[in-house]
Image (cartoon, rainbow, N blue to C red; front, side, top):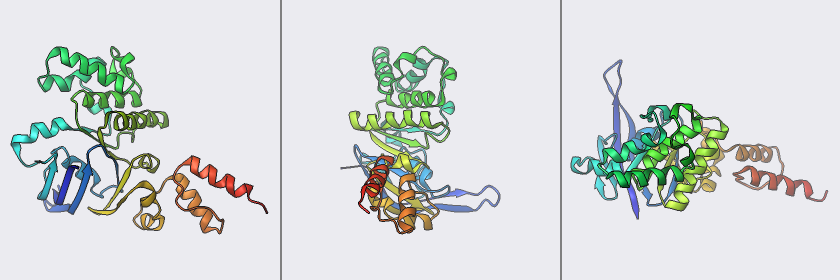
Amino acid sequence: MDYIRAQDVTFSYEEMETAKQREVLHGVSLSIRRGEFVALLGHNGSGKSTMAKMFNAMLLPDGGKVFVDGMDTVDESVLYEIRRRVGLVLQNPDNQLVASIVEEDVAFGPENLGVPPAEIRQRVDDALKAVDMYDFRLNAPYKLSGGQKQRIAIAGIIAMQPDCIVLDEPTAMLDPRGRGEVMDTIRRLNREKGITIVLITHYMDEAVQAGRVVVMDNGEILTDGTPREVFAHVELLKQHQLDVPQSTELIYRLKAGGIPLPDCVLTPEECVAALERLLRRPE
């Protein structure tokens, strides 16, 4: 069943210098099923972040429709409910942390929803445990690492009990360790709690971890499929100035040099296995 459904969505921004409208989404149609883990890819200006903001009605379409669990995002009477169900995590966690103590920060969302204090206490504890940050509940957020801050920001969304979390480049400002912590959290929330995940990322090795990859280019959907289906089209992606996972790139270049290797290797583990098989082949 579709949880989020976009139909022929168009959207324009007003350019500051000219005051002219610049269309950035050109009739995009996209459906996301409940419980999916979808990676949304595209270079800067492709429309992916604009599209993501449509999913919790932060932006409304100029044309077409966006539905969340059957609710039309332009219907003001359901706006509160849509934003409760679809949480948005942005790139810089410092912009989302509002309190001086971690557990107070996580409680901020439920308090604004009018949740009773006893239930808030339970939600905060559960959310912090879900992102493996419960032991830091009394810490000051500013003393945490970037990855820990982002996990606290995610916990603040979880405490609002959303059905879906949209993450707009949540690891862009993090080091490799922080990126790993956040991705582990995202996968666990999807796998164990059934939360629908929409991940916008520039890191192709993160996209490989999703169940589905949607690639946008110039305000339209370029391709859509499993990671193996999408990253099999290396030439197509390169034509649109898009990257592929490092392992895919390595095997692609070796194959281009005439070395017999399998198609569309996605992960370092698959890459190592393919090279080992090659080296063990008899002369």
